[in-house]
Amino acid sequence: MRNWTQVASTVLIVLTLSGSVHAQNIVYADAHGTRILLSEKNLGQFAAPAAPGKTLMAGSLAWNITYQDVSSNNNIGFDDPVNGAARRATAEAVMQYIGEALNLGVSRSVDISFKVSQMDSGDELASAGTFWNTTPSRFDNGFAFQHITTGTDPAPLKEDIYCTVDFGYPWNEDHTQDPTPSEFDLFSVLLHEMTHGIGLLSLSDGLGRGIGPTGEVSTNPGVYTKWDQLMRYGANSVCWNASTTTLLVPTSAFISDNLFFSGANATAAYGSRPPIYAPSSYIEGSSLAHFKTGVVDSVMQHAIGIGVVQREYTAVDIAALKDIGYTNAIAPVTVSINTSSGGHYVEGQAITLTATASGATGYQWYHNNQAIPSANQSAYSISSATTGDSGTYYCEVTTTTHGVVTSPTVDVVVHAPADLPAGGFTALAILILTLTAAAATLAFRPPRASAG
Image (cartoon, helix red, strand yellow):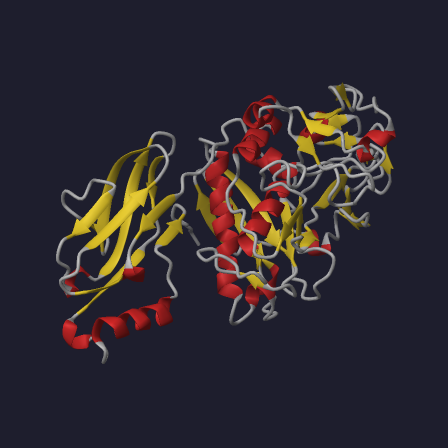
């Protein structure tokens, strides 16, 4: 058995008090049942900064990003002097990926804040969530979804998504490398949690109750998500009335191991309704909000093990995003560049670089940012390399679904014979393995463009 650990989501709920003269209050709730009532005039850790730390463009989605570790100069987490930059790069690679997957087609923005990192190896690897207005008897995906899909920010004084990471765990923080068998993969975990943040989660507790009018007590009727609305029990029983959110199934349904997601796109992608994780003992933060682990191939399983990589949405994940309202969602194209010798060669050797991407219809190779004439096939070859062929290469791939996708770069080093270490080719091979530990295939995603 692999050693699995819980990945829980965080829910942040907005509470509007009755009577227009009252200030708006906010209830913070995490997946473990915590409720924190805040005043609109004293938002504390949930207040939006005067300006984001940076803006990252991901397709047509602009992520306005704040790292509270960095803004407070606390030297931990995302501000760690040694690992902070790599952690931020991985978080931004996840945002890049999600933006491309949502495939919005129109300019939109979303605000995200990474709260002060935890370092205690607590109950959760990471958590992420958004806000809801607590007016009962409805289904919606929260403020992040509203901001992304409508272009209107429903709560300008607050960020749309809050994310916390516990860096007390052993992490693989380099999204271009696989984790070791003793590490959790930061990219995979953040992709899971941020997907909760954009609305793919449940607000139901183990008795089928949603968020109540006070925000601090779960009730039925209540506030639920589109995921909840598409939840089915047994043969095809609707769990909540579509208009009133009144519970229509026995409370035992939520610990029955007999719940399914009925979205038309997800059903088509899976071949039947994909099962939802609903074990016989309700697990707060895991039950109901995920596909069934080990059964549905998905980023949105309830847990992840050490050494496990899940950095791409599966067909079911993309289909579920469509079902909850991201109607243009599509799997981003991954470009892979195959090299030999870990990118190291000796003068006179042949070099072949090969790019692959699904739906590819055209290629253009670049060397040191200059287009290579006639290098417009999937493979680019040099029959007899010289030191002048050293440098940085990348490929622009035209695809049927995503237009032009540009790979990140790969470095090629051509060594002159006079520069070989004692022992010639054999010693060079040993040196290459020692310095690069490189595999033959380097898999890349589209570039991480950013502004600010």
